[in-house]
Length: 121
Image 1 (cartoon, helix red, strand yellow):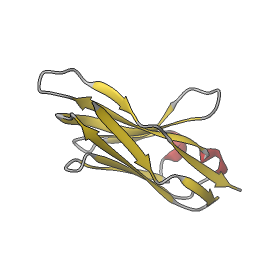
Image 2: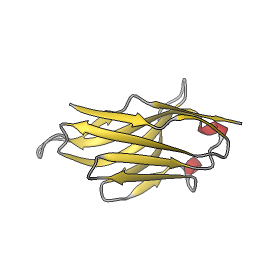
Image 3: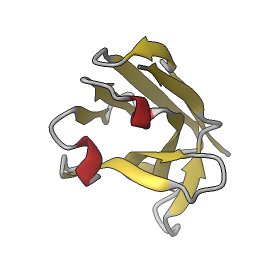
């Protein structure tokens, strides 16, 4: 089994910063990519930022220039540095990992339990 555990959410004023962390553990052979998604009540989960093991990144237009994703391949961790936060960034943020559990396996999607980010105006 593979577990993803997020940390770092909380309450911050508009214009402030937060750093989210996500640690992947368990039966991991390799991780192809990790990412952060967010989901508001009644809405679909949306991509915030994604990074491959090779370092390629992509971001939602709404966070470009404000958020930075990074990955520590050796530790199986991914981070999301969030600056210049806005009230509309308020959401539950979920960590995602695309994981191979052995050399021959397909890629599997694993999700963390989510961490709440609240930005007050």
